Length: 139
Image 1 (spheres, one colour):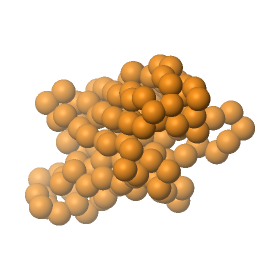
Image 2 (image 1 turned 45 degrees about the horizontal axis):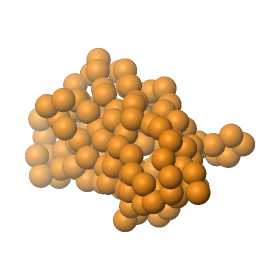
Image 3 (image 1 turned 180 degrees about the horizontal axis):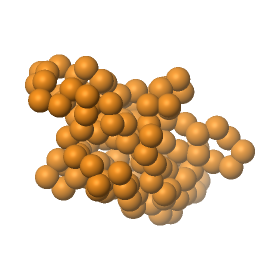
Image 4 (image 1 turned 180 degrees about the vertical axis):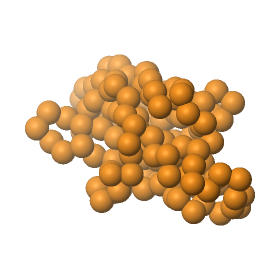
């Protein structure tokens, strides 16, 4: 699985950015995809994820209501729309993929047997990581 993150940049507080994560090398329908972020000296933090079967989403409390995750299955791409950005959102953002849904291929059209989460205890679900994209928010 290859993941290519893009869309980072510098913006003033209150501004917006949209990150993209292009996925290749694996059936996109069999992947949950997430965004994480990290700043120097701090632990990696889960930001948001989106599942594949029914598009279930999860957000960290720090971004809920400001960030929106979406996926375009035709383009094998996941987006993270970031609004009302704050200086504390400054970090390198990484996209990651979880292939647990592959075990349920062809089953459970209206149910997600392998939902995604971004809380700390679920980081191990993500086996594939892309390179990061820097987001800098100035006050």
